[in-house]
Amino acid sequence: PIVNKSKIFKKVNLDDSHLSHIEAIINSMTVDERRKPRIINGSRKKRIAKGSGNSVSEVNKLLEQFSKTKQMLKQFSGLKGKFNLPLGNF
Image (cartoon, rainbow, N blue to C red; front, side, top):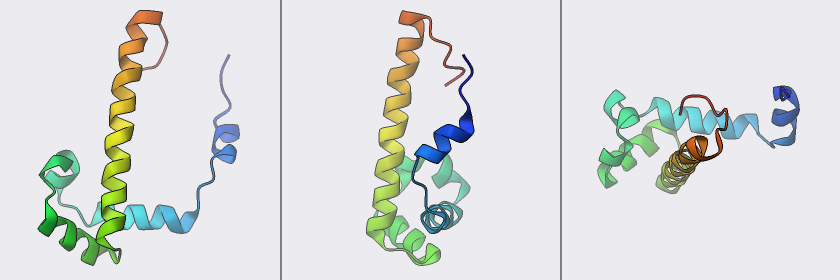
């Protein structure tokens, strides 16, 4: 069965101001930092935080969330072959 995406997004509590903070952080990163977040060190985090109007801890939270999501998607892609799940291209 096809899942209604609007129902999924209604269940997720997304605040527009939170999304704008995330967008500001991402827009304050260089192209290389977006492609390879592992290169983001302390001084880069400070620059990103200053450029986005957020704290370094907010930048750290976003990077940690990205890392966890990436790890989870890798696990799901491993399950795709085991159970023949239609998960698309991860």
